[in-house]
Image (cartoon, rainbow, N blue to C red; front, side, top):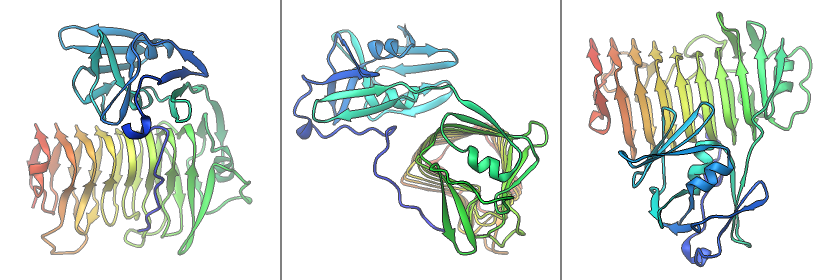
Length: 400
């Protein structure tokens, strides 16, 4: 399986220079949409991270700010978004999703200050650092999107771009069989693989791909060595009602289904990811992904691999009839990975008689949770590594 080189920086993973480079914090200012904002408490630095006053920033971004005295929690609310940030805690919540902070919120001069990175991750706004002028630049994004209905693979490829909702009206879209040559699209790249070309969606912000409600819309590829869809440097991606995989028979593929590189704020809902793809999900440096009411099935080498990622949530989903060699769920150098109300069943080793295949492989990771789930009828070693997993109200039955 190929590994695409990861970029070192991203707007949503916003790193402030070290204190020695920053040379103090007295001169730090804040701009929102190119206008300076007056802060009654100046931004400060803690552990090489800049903290900004949350009330003045949230209010200028249109959020109502509240305070829960009992739990010492600041609350920001706008439309359907609710953010809760306990003082002194490195875990905040965005609706039902947890977000890990580099440093906790603090109170200075009776004002609450939070890491500027939290602004980006919780609200989804762009945050940049002007080193020369020592200015934090926050720019709000246009949440409006254009709705584009597509009826064939060419229209689907041509529609890919930022601030768009692509509605798939048909049951099947075979990306390997275009009806005409694809038009150039700067948000699309085609990578040559062993037996075909792989579609890479790149540098896209605020894109929804939505299929048919009852029957789902299928996105398919024929080459065995490519991923069905790869996303690179993307954020605010929503995938709904999609059935996706390869057309070859099970066991013939060396490519996976979905791969995300350097992406954030991903939502996959009511979708089915199937083999012969080697894995359903491959995540590299991903922050905040939700996998809801969806299925990964019939993959030939594993269910998923998660590397250098955080805030990954699987809810009300099924992982069934997959095969694996060493392990089926691989989590490495990641944090805050939660399986809640999930069913993991009828999975087996890809090598008959291999008793060493594991369900979970956890390496250099923390805050891994398995809650209110069912692990049943798996012909693999399911309890290896569970000392590294927080298991709550989960049923284990008829496993190897």
